[in-house]
Image 1 (tube, rainbow, N blue to C red):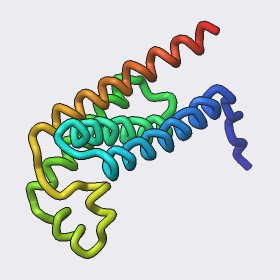
Image 2: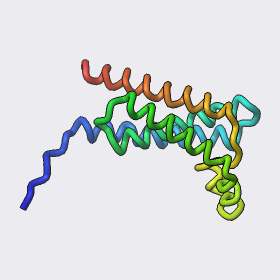
Image 3: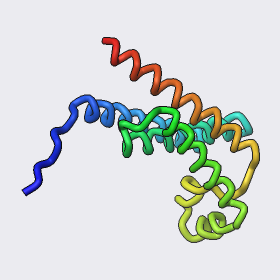
Length: 136
């Protein structure tokens, strides 16, 4: 019977911090979506979306290099934004409204810049906090 490798308590603690952060980012994104209006709120919501994608990837692969997680998050956000050009997310959102929150419904090139800011910020903050914890 094969033995399972021992669990790394640091990885578990990192995952918990990332999950708590993801919940807070989703809450901030929903508040921005519901209460905000105008281009600033739209761009802030898109940046928070990229941060959330970063956090989900980091939870799934907590030992992956920060920059790889950041680039993957940006690539995924870009793919989702380009997928909006097909019109399918808009069509699906007519039947099931939460699709609008996950996939969006209309391509906007400005969203790509917001995703870059969000993924970049998440990468820098995660790397800085992890290095700080490693020194302590």
